[in-house]
Length: 320
Image 1: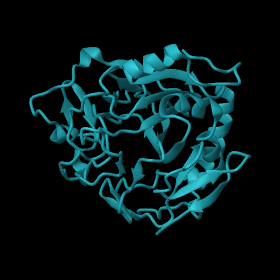
Image 2: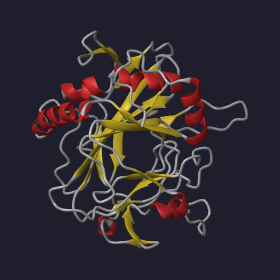
Image 3: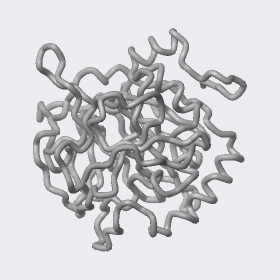
Image 4: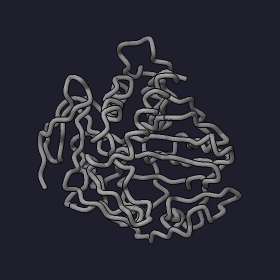
């Protein structure tokens, strides 16, 4: 484990940078002591039902929707989380000095919940075929894409309650084609056995996106990420990752919080006014990315900056 508690500069060492480049992941890294994480989560979970300042309206249609997205824009403790130096400094080592947080999501798992499918995400087009992030073209005209995710355990994440799994070193080759359009089907949730494990993807079947229909993830290479509350892992979204089913008790739920980061030259929601995911839609009228480090020199996205207190956002560039 990488314990950064006693340090004031939390950037990765050259050896850690090499490890991240090789494996596509680093951690667990301690962001908070367990007791501090308990206090933060107790406050956050009581604020979640109040959506008076949330940027997306409640879906209210029984679908998964995007109700759990981007609450860092209206809940202070989530705002301060995405600018925590223990989180941001390693990102600077990976992405460079200028960084945007473009999305956050909660990932709960309760007793009886299925595991999450093995998957990779480069442009977040799953289900619609429309890219939500767009990297500039490389010199050869290709775009590989991806974002860097900081996945933080708000509660202990164990083998029994459905911890993350990863396959280190798989982040440089995509086994899935996100341009394919697949249908949201709620009957798939908690209903499909895959290679001996109950897995799904929030109403989608990620196998439908495979480039090679006969390819199967090599489960022998899977590494479980057991984490104490307050710890995080940092990984490319193009890394093969999944989660185990929750086979534990009802009281032992797992709550993860994923914050996703890109450099400012990556276009976020290019030419889009509606967010369409998991069978629900939400307007992007109030949406903005958050500049968590450096400068926005290119000014191609909606961007808010962070005050010196670290958790109050000031609009800098908002275009409807």
